[in-house]
Length: 425
Image 1 (cartoon, one colour):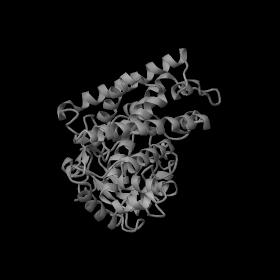
Image 2: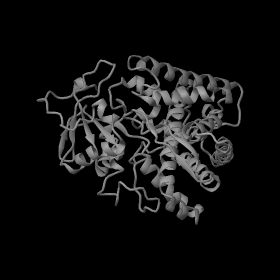
Image 3: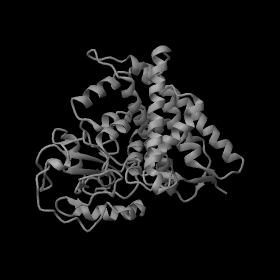
Image 4: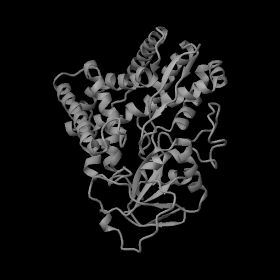
């Protein structure tokens, strides 16, 4: 099925609040949320013009899903709204998306089979090993940060802290050599950098993105081939050995999984760390409350850090059948875009949704997805990293001052590119 397969219909008008305009994504998160709040308050869904793309496309637009309840419904009904035709807001051929997002761009039963295979390698012993590595790395990362700050330097918190632990975690899990970590981290960031010109000029973005995609895929494939001949005590060895009902992951599968793990596993935790650290520095009273009983309070605090940071902005689905959502008739083949950034600020679900509050309970955020088959497989590891890193930061770091963050231009990732930190006077 392609967009050409949708029924002929009279073109509907695009909504006056244009979420597809590049200028919209150059605005601040709070300013953008004013627009999302308007859309949440209106009946139905908004029909948006297609996002510009480098690929030939027949897409006529997409439905913007901005309310928490609607997003949960779409997420939990994979038989109605599928992922196999792509999860990108802009049109990218499904076969290319599967290279970069692997089983995220699949539907059951294919998605279920791959998810079971990958889940099978996270044995209790493997999870314990991962957590031990995370704890050790978190200590080293904060040691390094303290040394930099102690010398009187103004430090880029993103480069020297937020980006380090997730990449070390991915590297240790998979078995990436320390000498390759920086190149893998850069490729992952550039892949998620989308339209940000820090990574490439507008005219070069497509070629640059494809080069980073190829590099990550090749890195995973080559490592898988090595682990078949030279097993080690790491996740890659478990992946090449994993088998369910006689099926195994191919090297091509593992190359695609490498892209997903390096990008999603690295960048989302990195962004939660950056946004979350700024929020905590801005709210010292909440830090004091947390430290009164860190072990029992950090779990709830992490949920708010994820909701507030909202590292993933949006994913798309495609209607697999004619259906209805929020009173709108949606035709088979039409795209719907799930704006997690909007659902996590929905005042009908979250009291004082635009306020940061680590005591918030309940906290049914959609930072790890809205449920259903595609709920984040890496949520447990992400929470481990945040728990250990923030323990080190909040118990060992003196009072600091932060510079104004520089934000990523992207409709996919709510990213902080740079944020200076120094010891307070």
